[in-house]
Length: 64
Image (cartoon, rainbow, N blue to C red; front, side, top):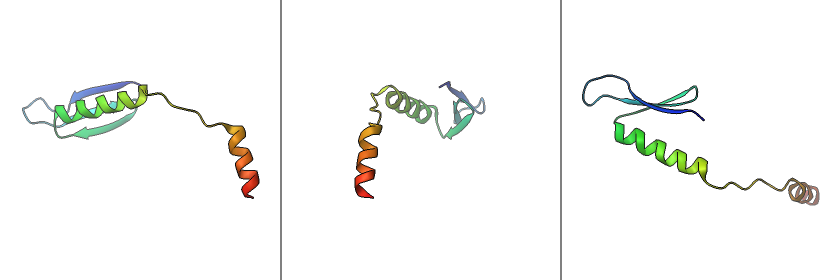
């Protein structure tokens, strides 16, 4: 995922934009934008467990 942070205007107190590929999220300050990106990157890099498809199919067949 391509993540970019940029100011929307050049004057002090301007809004900031975080781009996530084609998506854009606007923040009131640079610190809010950077905090969002830090949290997002930590969640993206966290270990993720894929579901066990065989177990899910057994549970659904018993419930039906």
